[in-house]
Image 1 (tube, helix red, strand yellow):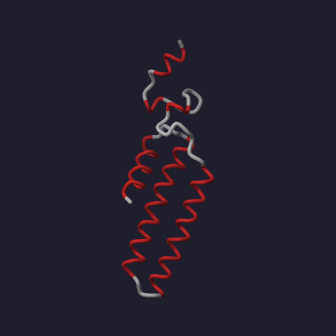
Image 2 (tube, rainbow, N blue to C red):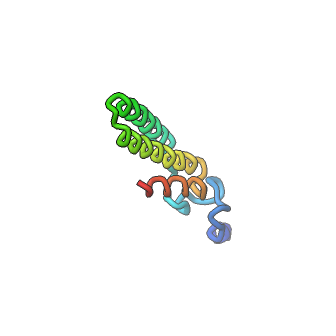
Length: 102
């Protein structure tokens, strides 16, 4: 009876204690360490490209790459939000809209 009851829960009603992770949008819990590393890598890459764009006067290219890195960082931030709450609509929208925009 309890499993039948929890299958009828809405998307915002679930958390890690009350619902199976298999009912979340990804059916797994995003890895916190991996997404934090990706944010750090994209942040370093953004700074390097900004410096190179300034140094070699490639403003347009450096700006576009920096914006791309920033968007990727926001997307991975959404996945970090989804690590704690795999049913988070805000985290899902952050990661899906930022990853799909590239």
